[in-house]
Length: 108
Image (tube, rainbow, N blue to C red; front, side, top):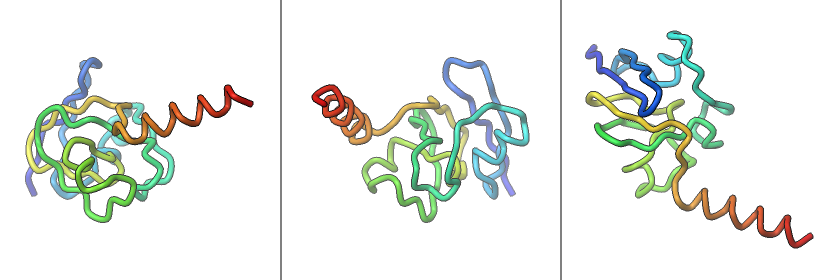
């Protein structure tokens, strides 16, 4: 089992996460307020932009293959190196969907 340092951009928070546990579970253990909902890689509530480092995300369903290169779902992501994550950042496709939904609501 290897441990990696996970740093959260802009918060000053940093935790040690083993390659056998998810970033979310380590956050919850450390008392870090990481958003989450489904815990199965679908809802994207726990999304974070990968600024540096690598993760493995087995069975992640909420991201396309391309998005999974730049974004981590912390409920599924296991570090493969030291990481810098920017929490609360969503893939562009999700941001575009949210903007389209807001525009449609404004039209009502």
